[in-house]
Image (cartoon, rainbow, N blue to C red; front, side, top):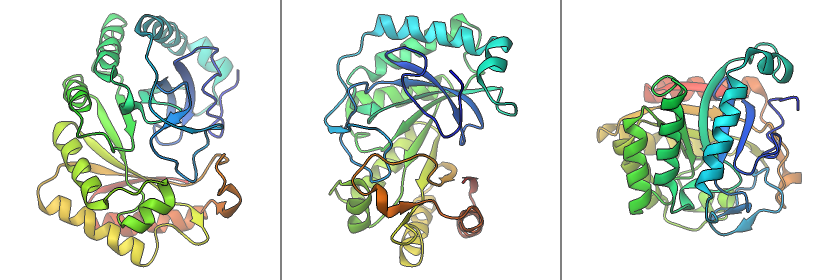
Length: 282
């Protein structure tokens, strides 16, 4: 196994739930916790790299197996020899532990129990409060009680949320994510998440017959985030990133990464317009 920023194979460690990746946004090795090994999601993003994606939710999670795998993977990642053998030079640092995977992790009703497992494992290896825990989510289920409980627990152990926000109009949202919910309601989910747990916006920008965040789309995005900030929503910043891995969706042939300099310029405009930290990963 040799890790690479363009290879996020969830089976790379031979485990069911736990996998290591080199993460552009985390800027090092991220240990992933995949709660959707059935490749099921309630959205279908055009840039999704999951092969065989199906509509649905997370299956029942074997918490004992997850805990055993997490302990094993953390022990490996904390071993300098393992890092040297499997991670490119310049990325040999354990950056975070990310609840993510092959679908929407908050669709698991066991999410609160998963957070409790993570807390216990990190405490036992002396990394609680030191190794960041990140929940990567499309945010669509934040209104559900089990998700709110998990976010509150995540906040108590120093965790953060990366909340997907690629578009703010109903039409653009449906085009990118195959989901026809109200954009206004979705922005309400972002506000609720940010008030429960430290939250970063994560925004994918891709050339999909033109940039997905340019012109009117960019103006709408800025105005929507500006309104949240005006209401005192404590957003931490924006993680702006481009297409790095091949989509496995029908729209794949229509997608292309934006030039890195264009993405950087967009990041500067967003930072200037909103007064937020913007981290760009081309």
